Image (tube, rainbow, N blue to C red; front, top):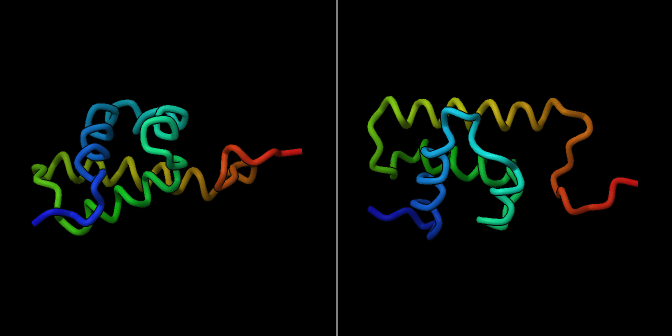
Length: 89
């Protein structure tokens, strides 16, 4: 079964290559996928939870942990914004 998100495989590959380093730089995610890190990790978490990824269980669980850490960090950081391109002042 193919995931409806056409970028799902690219997102999984990117996350796998960066999983040992916390998921990858926000700037790389924005440039490569046109998404904020929060959007990226939210989508990736949904892909992984839907079990439509062809990853072994250990890798999928590692990626879920990265997603949840990045999403939690974003929510708990009062200086973060949902749009990194929005002026702050």
